[in-house]
Each structure stands twice: as structure tokens, then as C-alpha cells.
Length: 379
Image 1: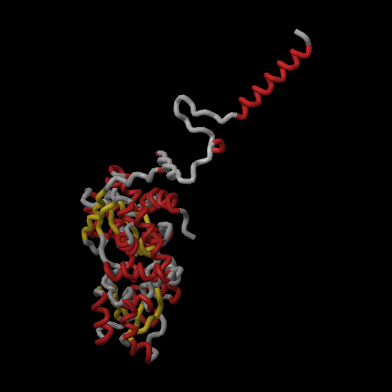
Image 2: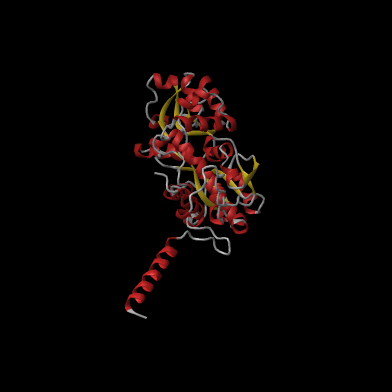
């Protein structure tokens, strides 16, 4: 074969290889799709079927349902739970509340300790510390009410005629006079005692009587008492009806005083830890709406929260919510532990508590930490 024939054959092979590379890619034997750029879809072709979502893209499974037995009453400081009910936050967490109406923490101690209740809400008192000293096991898990600055929903109120005459203008002027409180030895008396101490006096210098809040209005109106320590909305009602004048609000006397907390029973924590965590998530979502409404004054949140409070509390008059102070509730669930220690010192000093307890050991922050991890920190 001569050189010319070899060159001709080599050129023919090259042309064949080029033609092969330019040819369209055929479908694979397994029916796999061709590269998208190799085939143009006909103009009248139906749209391609949607690619099914992967397991990772599927919506998360709903949380397992859980019923939580809780001691709950109607004060505004339970707003976190009331808003969580109305806004569906409990349902989101798979939680149903089995509510036992109880108006004091003292009434909840036995049911919490023996497993009849999973959770409860109420004020800190000498009775709580005395029960712990006797061996009752309780956990303080979240804030439910403080007198943070601007949230002075408790107040010392003096009878209007005593104010107008100038006879009573400071807490020191209450010495020797009669003052009504809901519970002797409670927050009101601690506040009064704190206000009097710089003036060389104490709550022992005042004739303190126990009286329900509605009766305080009558007592001031008819002169049976000289002063009172009501909470809202009774403070606003007393002032608007001309029966009394605010002498001092508690957020001025005891700023950030810890009034009330959320309790968990030890059995609830041990036997249903997941539900205890999810309950706290729902609760703090409700508390954050409450802070948006009354702290940040978000108009939409304000109306939603007020609607929930009107439904679940005795304060049914919408106009009152624009006049009265409301409780402070920490949106991250944190309590003022220093205030809890101070209260114990006061109870011990005044003979209401005989045996000190380790306050720090009662505080269990694992649930608010979990909730804040889920929701982010509220600033």
C-alpha cells in the first residue's frame, strides 16, 4: 500500500469519529433521562411531573398528645397560659390542660407533692417555704409575675379624705392607722415594711387587717379602713371612684419583686419530661405576646392579648386595659432569685418561717432554657 492510500484511510477514520461524537445521545437501556440540553421539548408537551418531596422535606410529625393537670386561677398574671390557649400555642405543642381552679399556691402544695397536679401557678409565701422545710418537693420553673418598673400593678392606696386633708402623704403617716391587705405577711406587708424602714418604723406600727380586694373598696368608701394594698383593676377603680389616692406603687418600693411563679411537680418532671418542656414552650410564646402587647405596645398583639384576658379573667371592661398597670412577666421565663431569698429572710425575721431552706435548690431553669433554645432569646 502506498503512502497516499494510507493518508486517505486515516482521513476517513477521523471523519467517522467526528460524526459519531456529534450524533444525539440515545436513551440508556435502563430508561434514564437524557441530558436536558440534548432534547428540546415539543411546544405542546404536557408539563413535567413534580419531583416528589424527599423525607427531609416532609413536614415534621406532630408532637405526641399530652394532658397536663394544672392548678390555675383567673388573675392577669396567668396571661401566658390564657394567651397560649387562645392563640393555639398549646395545641401546637400537643398539650391539653386539665385545669383545677385554685386561687392560692398554698392550696396547690399537697396536690403537687402527691402527684394529683403536674403544674401550678401562684405566689411565693411563707407557707411555700415552710412546706419545703417539712420535706415537700417542689420546683420553681418560671416567672409568672413581678412588679418590674412600669408594671406596678400593686399599690399602697390611702383614703381620699386623708390625702386631701394632708393627714397622710407618706407611708410614715400610716403609723397607728388601719390598713387592709389580702394576706398578712404577704407581698403587701413586705412592701409596707420596706417603705417604712427608712423612716424608722415598720409594718408592726400599722394596724393590718385581712380583707378581700372588693371589700377594700367598700372599706375606703365608708371610712372603715384608712389605707389598703389592692392589685389592679381595684387600684384604678378606687382612684376613679374617688375613694382613694395612690400613695406609692410597689414597683417604686420593691422594684422587680418576685410575686408569683410557675411550679412543676417532681413526678411530672420525672415521668413526662418531654411534655414539661413543650408546656414551657407554649407558655413562653404566650408570655412573649403579652410583652409585645403591654411592653412594646404592638397594636395587633395588644388586641389579641386583651381579648384573651377579657375571656379568662374577671376584668371584662376593655377600657380598663388602657388605664391600669399590669403585671410584669419575664419573656425568657427568668425569676428574680435574689427577691426570693429576700422574702425568705423577711419571713424568718418576722417569725412566719422557722427553718430556712436552700432557695437556689428550688429553682429549676432547664425548662425555660429549653424553650429559649427553641424560640430564641427575647430582647
